[in-house]
Structures are given as structure tokens and as C-alpha cells.
Image (tube, rainbow, N blue to C red; front, side, top):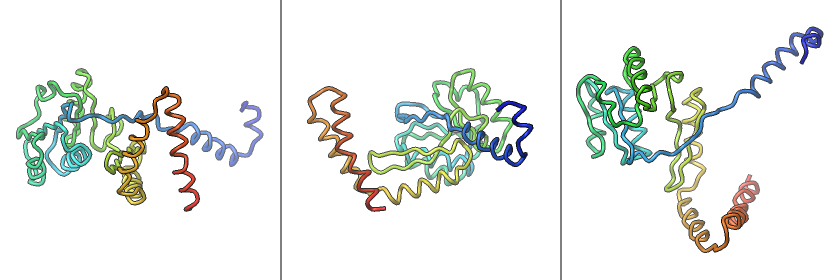
Length: 221
């Protein structure tokens, strides 16, 4: 829109149009991936409530995750949770730079922002991806809402804007997705293994087979 035309338009229209344009430009550009945490090494710094929340989140989704937790003091709940998972180690002392050795992921969950900034700089130099609790601008990745039903796993992201909405959407999906969806996945896998043609044909047949899922959903609604 040229400046000459903008000058003739009402301010209220321009405000609405600019807001609409901003919404259209806004997009979640995060790339979702599913990591095998049993094959990686995770460092969690912190031993309080936030660290407990992060550790619980990791282990709920990946119970065999390799996690080292470093803190000067641990809440009893953190100790209790860690005791149930043999792949979780607690180190009761202050953070040391050597804690980052051979780690691929880092989660900072203390009440010390200056420590977070210091450790983040070191981690970046070492190429370690970092999540900093309640500080989206310092995060290389977010821990979003996750829905797990057997082998089905759905990750939800609000681009760090609203963890609460991500939680509500997770609760919604957990309610509407049937518990026996794993049986469906098994049947689809078995059927796919019977297809002997090329990849393109397999995709076509699987799309035809599962198209009814959407049809059934629309009829129910």
C-alpha cells in the first residue's frame, strides 16, 4: 500500500489492516523433532520446584532418559522421583563447567538468572542445545505439551507464548483420543507390511485406508 493511499484512509481502517497483516505474518517457525533421550545425555541444573517440574516432564515422556541433575540442595520430591529411575543421577554441589562434558541437552531451572546467563554462554560455545526455565528468549528449544497414547505421541507448541494453553490442549487430546488407538496403529502397520509395490503406491493405499477416519469424525460431529 503506497503512502499516498494510506494518507486518504481512515486511521481506524489502517489500524485494523495493520493488525491483520501482523497476524498473517506471525507464524510458529519451530521445527518439531522427537529425540531418543535414552541415547543422549541431558544435564538439568537445579533442585527446586522448577527442576522437579522439568524432571517430571522428561521422565513422563521418556522414562529411560539419561539425566544428570546438579544442585547444591535437592527437594525431597526430586530425590524421591530420581530414586525410581536408574538412569537419573543426582550430583549435590554447585554447577561446574565440567558438568557439560559429553552432554547434548541442557536445562537450566534455578532461581539464579545470572547463573543461567553464564552457563548458557558456555553451552553455546560447546554446541549444547539449552532450555532456560521461564526465559523463552534464551531457549534453543521448548518443552511443549505432549500427548502419549501407546506408540502415538503428539507434541504441542504455542511458540513459548502460553504453556497453559498447551496444557489444556494436551488434556483435550488425552480425552478425545481413545485408549485403544495403539490397536489401530498395530493394524495399520500390519496392513502396510503386506503391500509389495513401491513407496508411492504404499502411501496412496494407506491414504485411502485412513481417509475414513476423517469421514467418520465429521459424521459424528
